[in-house]
Amino acid sequence: MFSYAAEFLSIILLILLVAHYYDPMRIQSPFGRRYWQCLVVTGASMALNGACVLTIAYSDRVPLWLNMLLNTVYFAIAYLMAEVFTLYLLEKLMAHVYEPSCLRRAKAITRGTLAALLALLLINIPTGVIFYFDDARQYCRGPANAVGYSQAVVAVGLLVICYCRNRASVDKGMRRVIRLGIPMVGALIVFQRLNQHILLNGTIAVCLAILLFLNFQTEKIDRDTLTGLRNRRSFLLEAEDALKEQRPIQILSVSLCQFSAINLSFGYQRGDEVLYHIARWLEQTFGRSGRVFRMGPVTFLVELPYSGEAEAARCVAAVQQRFSQPWELGKREHLVEAKVMELLITQAGDFTTPWLIECLEYGKRLLKRGGRDYLRFDDAAAAALSRRRYLTSFLQRSIEEGRIQVWYQPVYCTADRKFCSAEALVRLQDEYGAFISPAEFIPLAEESGLIEGINRQVMEKVCDLLERGLPGTLQGVSINLSMRQLSYPDFARDLFDLMQGKGIPVERLLLEITERMLISEDDAVRENFDQLARLDFRFFLDDFGTGYSNFSGVLQFPFTTIKLDKSLIKDLEEEKRRTSVEVLIDLFHRTGFEVVAEGIETEEQAEQLTAIGVDYLQGFYFARPMPEGELIRFMEKNS
Ligand code: C2E
Ligand code: CA
Ligand code: CA
Image 1 (cartoon, rainbow, N blue to C red):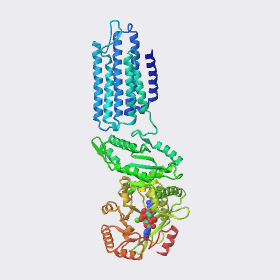
Image 2 (image 1 turned 60 degrees about the horizontal axis):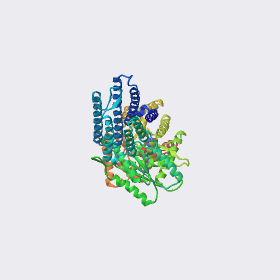
Image 3 (image 1 turned 135 degrees about the vertical axis):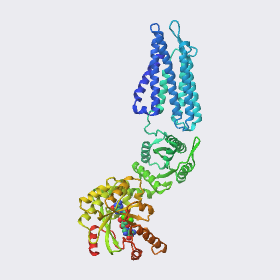
């Protein structure tokens, strides 16, 4: 009676497990598939067990061969069931062990055991060593009936050996399963041996399946699956609490650098392995006093209670010290570079969770850009971030409300002694009328994608001026192209159509490009460049001398004119400088380029550069950038 009740209950539990677990997506993952196999084989084993119990009960009416066949298949399935559970446990145990040989050997041993048992089952048919039917067609146990339990013994032995050999890589869930599962299965087997009239195989398997399900197959929404650390979602909830309770905390964000190099050189499995070890070290070092999170693929975050500067500095030093050492995995060592950002929340009320996340992201970016490996997110960084936020939303509003202005700075031609072109420069005033420097908002607009809106308004305003006609002696207007514009595949075509539509000749618009854009690997940039050159647009290479430029780069693209950056123009009174600028200009002239000198602020500079032979001069000495109306008046006076 007890046997039936146990099996019946186990079947119900199994049905519940199957119904709850079944999901085609889940079954596609390696562990999901293996677990599914455990459930299917357990179900098959229990169904066959039921069938065997029935056919044995009515053995006088059931042909002997059918009874024999059903029981043989039942034994085979029971062995298979033990095999898949063992494989699942071994694979889980070794999930974070990179060296595959140990798992491979363990699997070979379990498969060997299974093969031996199946062979014995075949031998059983003529010999009856496992079971047989006597003359009265009654089921009888053979001398080797309990041989199947050898699988459990082999499995436990292998699990213990593998565990001892790879203790450092075994995760918490697996340790729990070993601690609970081995005694549980052991106790059930002993109970079964003492009470041979009841059959508990199915019950044992279902109990194990439930244990595995609870430990591994329930997705924990607040945990990262690879490292077992709390995930980003969990951090957001925790941070909310910490901020509400106004506990002083220290946050360390640890970002690994060039981690993809490990993935590419040694494979993703190895990369995962290193991440797992780093996570474990962080958890062991900081897990007791604080909490460790995996915030992104290669970013960890440690949240610690803040208890003074000395302790805070000690924590930072511990991370830096550890990352200066390699991570030893099997026979290999990996040195992983990490950038650490420290953020202290010691004053009440300053922070909200979204702001905290923004600070972390921004800090990461500052670290990346600055080439440093440690940053304390201080008041200055917070102020810079606030300014960025303000600027981004202000830029957005300004674009929507059409408040982007274009000013023009006339460019002087030394040969004709006239102003022959003007550079269009974008201008933006804040709510109080103060000008915000394009050097500040252009890079921000490029990052946020707002540059497109700005560019469009600049282009429209410049084309409107060209359509109305340029004042005085001006022959053309130059505009500064942004990287974003040049990477837009249809840019060349759109610009050409816009100008054709307004009847503006191509030579009226000059395009200024910095060499930084040309180093880009974007094919679209090169494509636009070539297409615009074919349409007879003229290109100026802007900011020559700022560090990006080199002569071979200049020759690769169809520039007509080079603009020397203002940094080259200052200190011309120094002999060495003057000579190098002279040589440079001579070199450009000999190779067929015209040269503009930017940033002319004094009469002396203008005279010296004219004497050297510069073709065009631009700078505050001649004219500052001015609005369109002023440009018209300026040109009336200076033509
Ligand atoms: P840039 O293309 O090198 O522009 C020349 C900058 O030098 C302008 O600064 C101009 O006001 C300044 N300048 C002119 N003469 C002198 C001088 O004698 N002394 C000094 N110290 N500076 C002088 P601005 O207008 O602040 O523009 C800064 C940068 O912003 C520009 O450098 C350009 O890279 C970018 N920019 C400006 N307008 C646009 C635009 O419409 N689109 C794009 N993509 N970038 C723009
Ligand atoms: Ca320029
Ligand atoms: Ca420039």
